[in-house]
Each structure stands twice: as structure tokens, then as C-alpha cells.
Image (cartoon, rainbow, N blue to C red):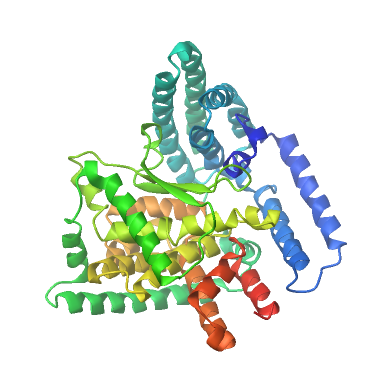
Length: 515
């Protein structure tokens, strides 16, 4: 899946080998790389060689963590499901040639037993919650298969029988996988998902390159919750002193377009924000980048219920991202309200310009292979959240848009507290759900879905806010250091010259360069 997403053509239609012998060979290869790197001269701190070695060390440490004897492949059924779902998804959107896409998809579907067999051999001691999540995902994948079948048959009517046979085979495999989950559920009663303090700290150290402790992180999250709540109240009172910020946001949701106008409105907003950035000269756009805004295809609406961004493939193809928007039915009022006139501005800033798309479009142009390969959430999610705040600073929002943006920042502040709490055993799932309902105003079902993915990605939920804070602090320090030579354009360009590597390494490089 990584190879396909990154643009390596040799990966087309291949199902990954997660068999125990292959995992063992991979683990031994990583240990060999670690030994060889330890014998290399470390390079001058802040040099390009030093940076490459630091990134390689992190990649190897993380690889050994994930593929170790207690790694994800042993306990996480979503690892296998995600390769089914996103392997198919990337084939459908990454391969432009229709005939080649069909061949690769048929090959992928017809080889899906390999993943099923690996899961059968490897999975043991699965957290109870993850089995429940996987059971729902398996049902959704089977629906996804139906939509892919319909799409392929529409494009290739002469090969309907081949398509039907491959889909039937993959569907049978997923049925067997559902049976496997049911059997494993009896063996996994009481197994918890929490990684514990030591493993949480390991991920902070090697993935985010952060020295923060869990207690420090939790205090930071609590402080930001209080700070953001105060800002929300202040903005709400400036609009209407008689109404709370939650009431005002609820009323703002009524300002939404009709379903058949939604894509055009997002396209207009993308053009608007891009023009604003260029007029303000806030950042340098890479040559040849482009962003396509389009309705989420029917074949993938099960996997993209609201909106999604897909970055350019880092190692091939055009420098073009895709911003998918799932258009609700004309009568689905609640879904349309989520695309209201205020929240869609913030969503566009986060996903498109100057957020994810602009960062990844610049990353694609890096000469460093490690720079193009490494994707650290505290940088790319921190950057996107920083961009939301930046656009407020630059006067892009009206008051209700600012209210939406701050509500989203409150949500990210809660994530810090929940991320730490869940994985150190200090907070239950129900307590996490209630925090999101009480503080952010989420509906219980939405909050439950949020908490589910937090359990699967330790240290990622906290990365949005801690990453934004790191960027703001770095900006403040460089503003003092550069003096009259400081501009936002210069800062943003220098920052994004490093792709999406850990922010502490970016800071070291910027300071060591003397710029």
C-alpha cells in the first residue's frame, strides 16, 4: 500500500506479504541496517548528512517497533483491513490508464487470500474494542466492493465476468475474515488497547522526536482547553451576548448550500483562498502544483463520509492533489449542515491551501529521498492547524468563521488530554466520549468514532496541537533572531523546505544553518 500511495509502479496490484517468515526477514534486515548506521560517521550536527542519518535511525526504530514480536501485525486486525481498503482505493484513484487499472485491480482482488491467511496466522490477543471496530469496517468493505464492481463494469462492460469473479472471490475472503474476527473475539475478552507510558514515550521520542513526558502533555492540553474556551466565549459575546458559542455555531450550520451546488462552492473557495495567499505573499507556491476538487466517487463513499485529501504520489506522476468532497443527499440535512458556509472555509484552509496540499506539493519536489518519504503527524497536522490560525491572523475570517475555527481548536485540545489518558489507562473510552460531547458539543456517535481512531493511533491525536504550538514558538524565536530580515514568506518557505519531518529536526537545521 505504501509503495502504491508513493507512486512505485512495480507495486501495482501486489498484495503485501505479512507471513511470519517475511516479517522475520524484514525485522532482521532492519537490525542489520541499524548496525551499519551505527558504524557511520554521524556527520556535523545540522548538516544534510546528519539529517539523513537521524531520519534513518527513526525509520528503523519505528520499523522494529511496529514489526516486533508485540507489534501491530500481531494484535491489530485493522492493519490487514486497511491494506484491503486503501490498497483498492489507491488503485482506483492513482492509476490513470483504465486498462492498466483494471488489470491491477483484478490481480489485487484475486490475490486477497494472502492477507487473509497472514491474519489467520498472526493475529492473537486482539483488543476487544478493535475487534468491534474491525467487524464494522469489514461490513463497510463489502459494500465498497459492490461499488467498485459497479464502477469497473461500467468502464469495462466486455469483462464483466472477470470482474464479477474477482469481486466474488474477494467478498468470500472478507466473509472468512469476519468469521476469524468472531472466533478471535472469544479469545480476546478483556484485552486492552492502551500502549502504556513507556511505549507512548517511545513513539514521542522516535516518531515525533519529542522529549515531552505524558504528564507535561496532559497539563498542556488542559491549559489549551481553558484558553480556547475563553476565546470562544469572547468571540461569541462580541457577536451576540445573549447566545452561547454553541448556540451560535448551531445557527450558523443553517447557512449551507444545496447539495448540487456544493462542489462548485468548494472550488470557488479554493480559488479564493489561493488568490488571498498570493496577494499577501505568505508563501511561495511550487511550480506545476495543482489541486482538483471533485465529488467523492461512488465507489469510495463508504471510506470517505465527509471529505478527504489525497496528496500527490511522492515518487512519480504530476504534482497534483485531490480534494474529495462527499456530497450528501438533497434531503440529508444534518450532513449538509456540516458543509456550512463557515466550516467549509476552515476545512479548505486545512486540507488545501495553505494546509496539507501546499505542504505535500512542496515535499514532492525535495531532492532528499528521506525527506520525501518521512511523514510526521506533528509537522503535517501541526502545519494544517497552524494554517487555520494564520488565516485568522491575516484577516481571512469573519466572526462566525473564527468561531468555527476555535471550536475545532478546542476539539484538538481535547485530543491531547484524551490521547494521553487513553493510552496510559487514566481515562476510559466512555470518559473520552463524554469529554468531546461536553466540551466540543459533538454528538455521541461522532465522538465515539473519534475515540475509536484515537485508540488505534497513539500519539497522533496530540500531534495537531503540539505541532501547531511548536511552529508558533519557532516562528517567534526566528522573528527575534532574523530581526528586520524576518518575513512570513521567508519563514514559511524555509519551514516547508524540510517536507514533513519531525519539527525538532527542522528547528535544529534552521538554527544550525545560521539563517
